[in-house]
Length: 227
Image (cartoon, rainbow, N blue to C red; front, side, top):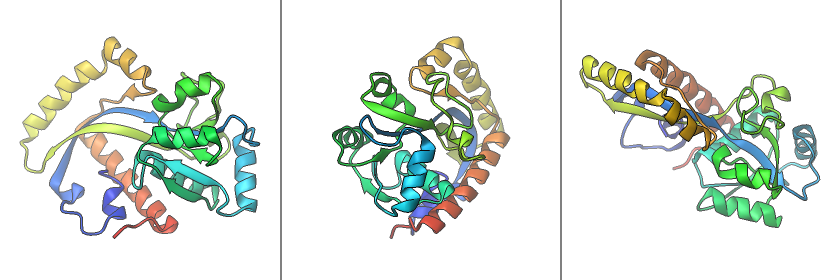
């Protein structure tokens, strides 16, 4: 929302870059590129090869326009140089259901939403979108193994209104980090396919700027801007 929406939606009532200040990234986790169990694609290279030869014939389901799962799929398509057709749903579970039924060919859900279905063999994971393999799915390649440099992650962070005293920002970050880096919290996040970040306000702000620039390019080149 903070990094993509300003480039995707015209006339937002707020400007994250001006109206919000970073405190800390709470947690981050990858999406996973999945196809149906009966799909002919056995690995990511096969999917990319097919999509390049069959423009717009790969239908990608998502949780809706502008959601993490939508943008993850578009980012993958942008990086792979393929042209796919986006099919928005009212939630990623609905998209995954149609994937299993063969109505669509591709979904890029958050790892936590898909991991049990992957392990049960109901859908096939071709790659995780983290730069390295996920501990939860060690046999599934990272997309970067096929597309060097590719990475896509969903994250949740703490931000405050611009003008919040610096000492307040720093105290919230320090107090949050103690909880986020605890073993109990780590274990809870791992079940959802995520891990704690707990970076400093300066580090979080820099990451937001970098990601915002990346989404600006992807959204423009994929033609994703909304009125």
